Length: 575
Image (tube, rainbow, N blue to C red):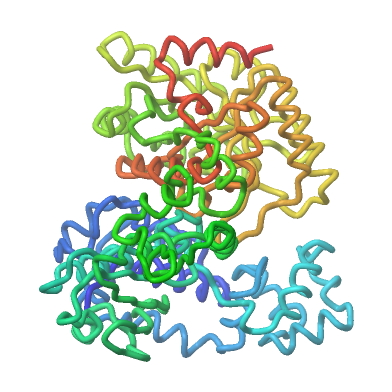
């Protein structure tokens, strides 16, 4: 059995959840949370090291947690987690899957109302007793009521794409290595780059003499194989992710690649287009009668229908067919287009590495500049910066820049937007900075009008450059806060201010729809890693993918500019 970073992080997060429900020591809970976050951000699979010293080299991993990683890697189980599962009733654990119910709120429900399961919660909602519990305002209660009313099938959990990739890519490599297999691809929403994945659609090109489905029975990450035949199979991976496997011949592989990649709506539009031309389009090819016009090549399928090849990320029926017909599809942003990163942290706040190590990692990632944007001191950021510490960091960055050649470190800060729209650092402290990133990190449950007014007031401050992770969502954990995005977008355009596409795997925020809205309005985007350690500059890949889904080009992105051009755009935000 192979153990992935996602497995270890999920185990540590579950331990932290269950300890929180029990009311355990906050430092102990935080240790598990920090370890899970750091492991998720690693650019390599930690279990492959099979060495305690390598585990302890990860920030936040001491001897105790290293031993737990070794146990999980060796046995596939964790005794400490199993013990906690026995101690915390299953009904309380079920509550954690509901939106807005983290372990702190679950404990509050248990303590205040003796709620122990979803049925108890449903009764409390129906009788109005939930309003008695602190932290359960109207917005939270409404979300819970909606979630409890959904059918179980509607509550199937989708997985962040970065987590799914830890299982999808090994599966693809395994199938590609089966003797006789010519090619294997993960298609569907995964290939389109959607931020979450509900299942994996796997397409394999192989002759009839090869049986990839049979080979799956020996796959280490297989949870169960539910159905299996020569050309189709379905099952579930060990982490609970369902998959469907289809095997096609080489003469149909391009058509199948197209057929199983696009959204349902994109596929319907293409088939309608084919019928209007007297053709039939299926996973086996594009036909006129019995004569095949296209099949081996995906590009030929589109070309025969009078269309440019459409990048997978755009296949959502949001105008891509019309643009492809006019040869007007955008030249989408590429990772190689990025010159720098305008959101990164060091251990001066909640990062894990030094200033010098972070800039070395940024250079190794192919960048020519990086903005160091450590947190302001507010809301539990223990090492958050006050004005004096920020000034000392600026002096250190100035000294570094005097020695550097071919690379620039920009002075910055990530500053909390307070509940009333003020910023957590005074204007005088922000004036010397090159980049001021502002973000909401608290009071996510404010009504839309108040939340919008809060953000708009923050955007009026004279030194603001970038609005970070503008919806505040955490995939699978926290819904976006209520916000009139059109008003925020208008204010950003008028000011100007730039909007961030955050590459942290649980954020990917802005979402693709809002990225497209920003692109159409002419508001520049900042593609950001939000790196908290040297390995997390790899988050830029996810942010680029998200931007591509929103039709973003190189010209739409702030940090594709060389440093001289960037500085002009940064100065344009100052008032």
